[in-house]
Amino acid sequence: MSGPRNLVLLAAFAGLLALHGCYTAPAYVATTKSVPASFDASWQAARGAAYDEGVAITAEDRSSGTMRGTKGPFDVTISVASQADGSVRVGFTVTGPQAQDPTLQDRLTRSYQRRMGR
Image 1: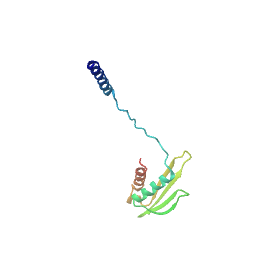
Image 2: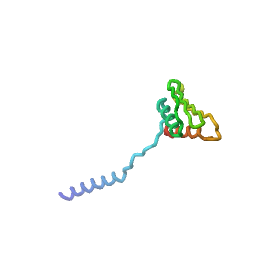
Image 3: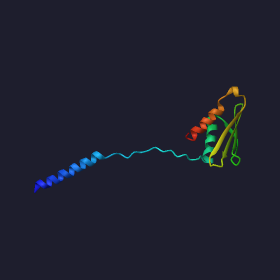
Image 4: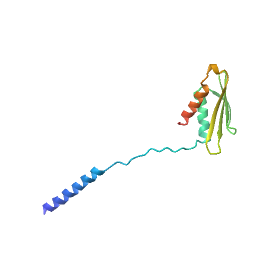
């Protein structure tokens, strides 16, 4: 009687080994979903970008989507506007002697993009 029992156990063990050899881990596919930025997130990121670049905000008007600030001889205007398609447009305008800091506008834009995770 021990012979057939051992044979059954051996067959079960062999079956388990065969199943173990067939296991494959699930494949994960990275997906990205484009989510429009909210006005609030964009406003805070633009405000943070100004801070990052040393621009002192002197006036804020959320209802018009406008911030104004200064950095040395430069006047900076930041506009945040909701678009019809649900996206948010942010713009930085720098006026002043560009020769003293020709990259301020670009740095503001890069800092904003970084804060938005882009």
